[in-house]
Length: 41
Image 1 (cartoon, helix red, strand yellow):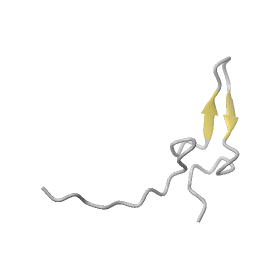
Image 2 (spheres, one colour):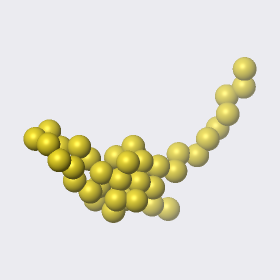
Image 3 (cartoon, rainbow, N blue to C red):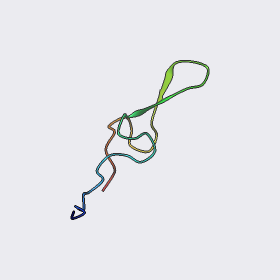
Image 4 (tube, rainbow, N blue to C red):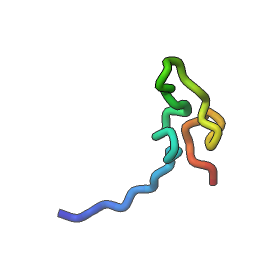
C-alpha cells in the first residue's frame, strides 16, 4: 500500500464545519476561518 499525501484544506479548529458546538447548547462561528470552514492560506 502506498500512502497518499493529501492537503488538509479545512480549518483545523472547527474541522471544516465553520462553527463550534457549545456545551450549553447552540453554536458559535469559528473565529479562525470566519465561518467558512476552510483554512486560511
